[in-house]
Length: 469
View 1: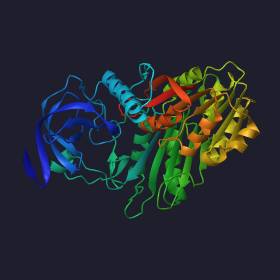
View 2: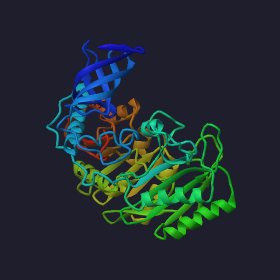
View 3: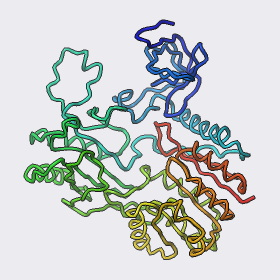
View 4: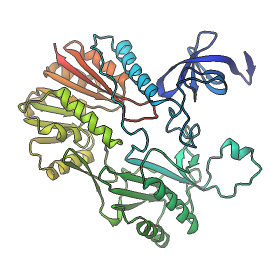
């Protein structure tokens, strides 16, 4: 063990597990845990630490003396620099194993409740090109790789269109290809970058808050519709039209071509006016005969095919016969509510975001679903005895909260509500486990089904059925 610049080097460390946030896990000689970037369980590695805490180190691999049998060759040339697909070097069957293990450990260690045998994790049929929404950033000062820095070649063109380097808000990796979204995504992105350079348009500089081109969003649907939105920092009508006309001409399959003029300090779209340039201002996703209208600001599960599987599991766990009153908490744009409606007597959806509820109502109207109602409100405030008295006591509650899980007041109200079943969908099994521990006073977990929505990453969804004791 050698010391250099207060950083510690550990040699021939065996990687024993995959942990939170996609990091590999090993043990240091002093007993601390080491969280390692870009290693795979089964590797034997030399690492250099870059962070030291009381109970753990964080480290990067400097060399590998033994390669794990679980390793595979990453398909993406940007792997290791781009932070998007941290598990591309881990075989897919092993990704599924560690995702299921994480869910089990969280529910057991944090929940500390009686659990049934878990259903095997449901893997994704598509392991690449599965996302329906991608967002890219323009930059006039692209991130240089180590190979580019070490080379003698002078890189005069520093324009980039791609992803933020992890932890660096002003550094953009210029993409050659991305394996997350299917064609024509890569072709559209590459054309826009090339055309912008041909027109000599200024790429954005985040530090100086100057330039013309800010961001690009591409959305696709399983029905083949495509939405493209370009965000400009200021209006320049002549150049804006030159670029957008070129995109529309090159890609006639684009359903919705939009733009935004955004001169504020950040590039979020939610408070911006979306302008239609060509086509219509929305695209349609379809699921089991239902249509869902998606605009530039809409939330929709980013893996459409696997979302269908997730919703089928949710509906199956609910075990509806057609006579039940169902509450759908954190309903978003009401996708699950509408998906289960044909098996229920009535579904009540609640969501804090007004735009999402407007979209839910519009989609219900589009789908001619008359047994759903949607309400706007902060869940911990609106989900109270007055609300229940007005709408009835549900037989089944479906809840799909954000990563932080449910507020303690919502959990307390669920306990008081005493619905026969609760189906809890979660993108964070740690906060889900915390909530399940609170619900354990009145409910028993009878089914657990992990679902992989995001291959090549550590993220995992989990569906739990709770039944009243």
